[in-house]
Image 1 (tube, one colour):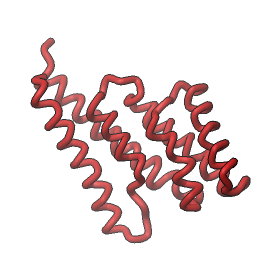
Image 2 (cartoon, helix red, strand yellow):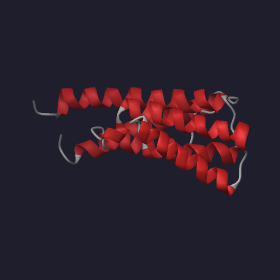
Image 3 (tube, rainbow, N blue to C red):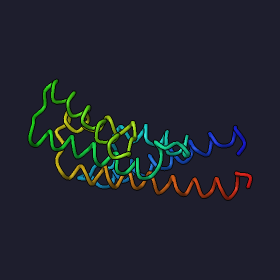
Image 4 (cartoon, one colour):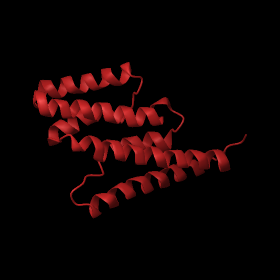
Length: 151
């Protein structure tokens, strides 16, 4: 793919993805669809799609596991400087142990703990949002392979 074309296509898909999630966020007042780590996730998924850190399993499972850690800490441990640090370190450890490393997901425990999220946050925005990003990433990858890559 032309080195000048890909950045625009990747940026367009990032725009579309965050736009869809932001639109859903505004029309469903009681449900969250966005979280800040998704901004970094779209950089990886659309900007460097061949990276191991941008693969569907890493994006979905990495976000889910780290978010689960954040909610567990909110529910059972509490929020303090030491627990924010411990939850983040545990999230890194779990992603590395499960081979699901996705750097933007490292922010999930802090985000969840600092905003006091509950179990519902695991599914929306975390799981559903990650699946939307991955789904559109797969579409971009199919387009890239079909129209822009030499065989």
